Amino acid sequence: MNTSQSDTTPTLESFDDLLAMARAEPDPCRLLTVLVQAEIAYRRRPDGSEALVDEGLLRPVMVRDWAVTDSLCLADIVTGADEVTHEWRFLMTAILPGTRGRAPTPGECEPHLERMATALAIGEDLDAFVFFDREGVPARVTNASS
Image: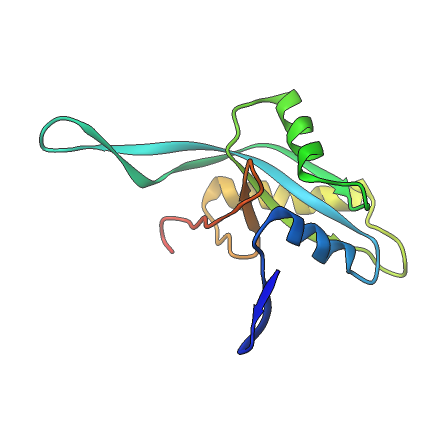
């Protein structure tokens, strides 16, 4: 995890960096995740061939919260996700911190997960969330109006 001298906001270089941040929280927290399916857009070239463009439609597939423990890792999340569907490309994430030494309950996570999925589905600003590909590499995702 790197930070620049002019900015104290950490730069996430991998999913492991996000987990390290979550584990460093003073109170136990939960990791909120949304599996994201991506329908990639293509444009027809003048010669009739198709060219991949850097845009497409993103759709939430599944939401889930995870207890942030020392043993939680990306492989566990990918395995759990693939048991439901292989049709996902990105993992949309957020950390929900606990309070007074207690982690949020799954019930307390539910409205946040719903808000994340809704934000993705209707194209709201996604800057509050961190996206990773299936290998845990951060991905830049923006809506069309950004």
